[in-house]
Length: 251
Image 1 (cartoon, rainbow, N blue to C red):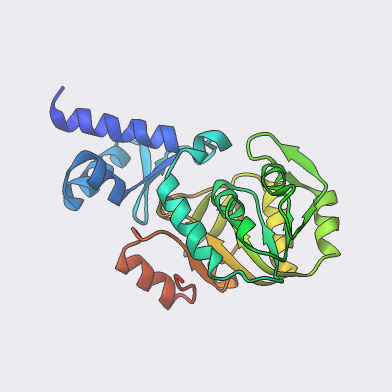
Image 2: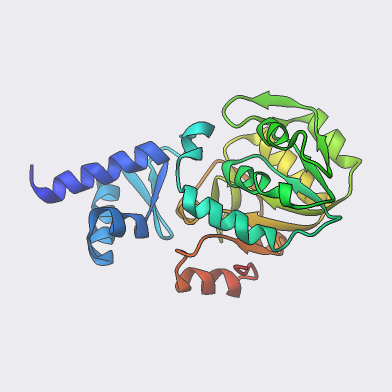
């Protein structure tokens, strides 16, 4: 087996581990040019081992969901960067919504610096993270919990949200596409996220760069329904321009 085949097998293993891979990650991890990385993905797609997307590739099967604690160990520096950026859009007295997800969990970890805040969430792990935070009012929706994501969803969660008015929601997703919109793996969670977005005056999409090379099963809504996208600094200028021209700027 030659070096090229070994590298392509390693790329496929990375896709299997994470569910997706970004072109920039291939360039960095395997010390190859962008042209070589694109060629590798082209060959892997021809072999029906993956599906190429805008800026990367996903598994041939779009039903693969990475468990929560595995995702917590992925792109941690990027998620910390996103959390720091998100804080710039939060101020004392705000009523904010946090959907489930690892990126929103990183945001939750930094909310103890505010003196007066109300947080509404459907994620049990985020609620646990925030319990006891001084000056913070915490509202946890009811609903059915999924152990893969620790999110509460379904009619009970939606009924709770219908009676609330949220100033700003920070929404995590599993995949993003200009053509398909914001996507997630579970149908009930998608509906609950739509409800939280509907009850919010402003919604911010928070996602690391890997989510832009990934598709998922259920659509939450179009990216243009948010006030903007908060992501990490590895997003390419070309991608920033494409989303800005579509009405969903990176903040």
